[in-house]
Image (cartoon, rainbow, N blue to C red; front, side, top):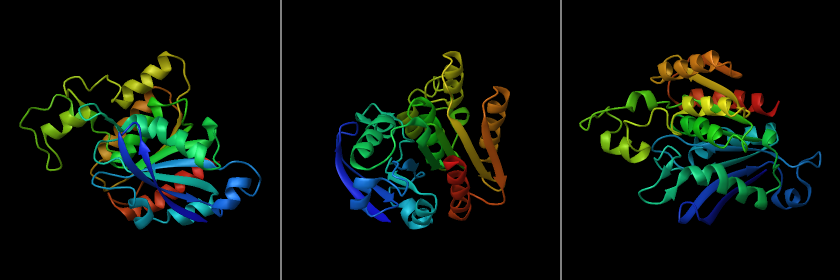
Length: 263
């Protein structure tokens, strides 16, 4: 097992950035051989939550064990607090970074597959939203999405007043991240709108695995998206289990999600 931390200049972010990686072989062996079957590794791009960074999955989960157990390369970038969306004000294009640049960079640097069916995106909370939104946005890149306790808050913030504050963030933050909150519904930041667009264009929707704890404050939002997917006939797996918005739940269900994805 190789654990690496990579610093490189991101054109999408216009600055140096960092990501962590687990590669389930010694790096030099991997460069020449891929995995034990001689094939490139399947790859999971795994996103952290609000107030997190690229160290979260390394420090708080058994991701190193899961990478080895399921023979999958795992890449853990940092998305700041921008919900993995493009920040047009600063020119930091987080969505473009996650959906295009990071995938291209890691495919050049590591022995990972370039096939859609072997390329997955996942995350928790804010990263769960980022996985769903960017998995759909870049559906030609990602074949499967793993979304845990996803912060699917588009309906919640749509049309909020300027004095809005939900105890987590306020109007200024949401309008900075999502743009005009009066236009967010139906935009490409709205996962439901992206699903409908893919259907209209007769493009393949990535398979989706969703999980949320029954005591999680985001349970209603996850149930709503599950019901939407059912109504649109979108193939997906939705699981609820005992737990709240914490690493005990995420550590258990990320393994379930990886097991689902690699099969």
